[in-house]
Amino acid sequence: MLEIKNITKKFGDVTALENLSFTVPEGSVFGLIGSNGSGKSTLLRIISGVFEPDSGTAEIDGVSTYENPDIKEKCFFISDYPYYYNNSTLESLVKFYSVLYPTWDEAKYQKLCSIFPIDTKSRIVNMSKGMQRQAALMIALSICPKYILLDEIFDGLDPVVRQLIKKLIMELVAENSTTVIIASHNLRELEDVCDHIGLIHKGGVVMEKDLDEAKLGIHRIQAVFDKELGEGVFNDLDIVSVKKQGKMMLFTIKGDSQMIEDTIRAQKPVYMEMLPLTLEEVFISEMEAVGYDINNILE
Image (cartoon, rainbow, N blue to C red; front, side):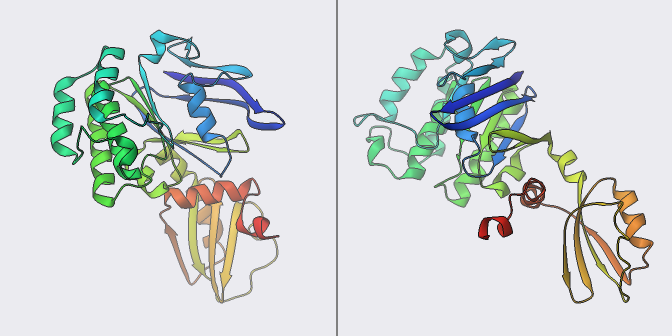
């Protein structure tokens, strides 16, 4: 189990993370989402042991990850901008990582070589961004770590390769109970593969839930009324946003679905429908609740 305990990290006068705490269940695929500059990449570097937090700890199985070789053997981190030496090839990386990680699976690597169209003898720095990511993923998947940390991993990949990566990640989770943490702005891709999500903003946790639970807690309702509604008729509802187009009203509301439905139906709408939410809509709703929305940005 991965536990983030009261982590604070500052860079000069900038606070990247502040008193951040949450837990990532073992064997889960955890989507780490948030606004630009919210601290997602910094957090992944702390979990992987690259950065030391100013206070708090990132712990795997109760042990801090920082400066701990035994714990680092269980983890593999692919950053948003992976670094490669000028002469690095996939062959040279295999020689390095197969010695460094005792869990290296040569059979799996050879299988991945037959799947990904990469010349193992070519210099990686000369490859496209998408091909560089594929090379890094081949290494990560061949190591079979207990924890994989991925920062914007879908960036630069074409749709076919993105689907392949999601399939391979799910296979690794099923085979090895690997815990995967993916930080990404591509919420559509995360929705396909994640079972848990954590939303951070300005260095703090806004929400950390099972993905299905997060969707159940926020509801989008479309309703048409043929009358003017009295002031305050929906005061008992936790309304995140409401938009009106003629007689049509579109609500985003937190809370119990039955209570919400009963309250709106009490006003005798001509038409009412509860619509399913996407992860992107959950993100927008939660961010609007903490004051991060387009209207505030444009003001």
